[in-house]
Length: 134
Image 1 (cartoon, helix red, strand yellow):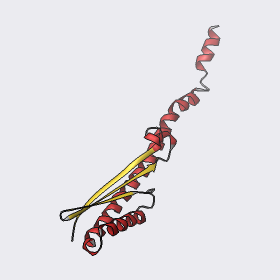
Image 2 (cartoon, rainbow, N blue to C red; image 1 turned 180 degrees about the vertical axis):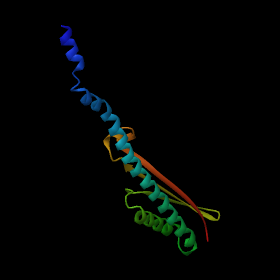
Image 3 (cartoon, rainbow, N blue to C red; image 1 turned 90 degrees about the vertical axis):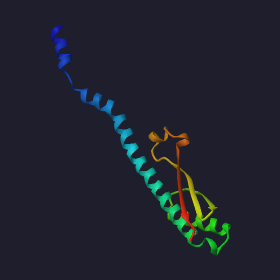
Image 4 (cartoon, rainbow, N blue to C red; image 1 turned 90 degrees about the horizontal axis):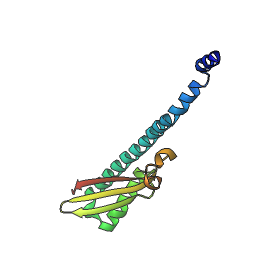
């Protein structure tokens, strides 16, 4: 009986498989988090740059056209500069001596593991830029 118990204790054939099964969910969460963080960060940079380009164009050409034309042009600039944003909402707000462009868009989170942490698996990207009129 003692010999049988010693053979069971020394038998470690499945140990690495059990350890891998315990560590795998953590590794998958980390990998998916890195992928989604890069995706979200990249789209945030695109939204920031697109709002800056639209605000700059609108500030330079503000007196050349109407507010509706500026709104449409700003929306087109954002769509051209940030093609991965799905139907972004572009809001143009003129104020005394400046113009504000706000870009907002819902984007899908890529991996289902990280999507479980967000409402409906979507993340909202927001960018605001204020530019002085010229």
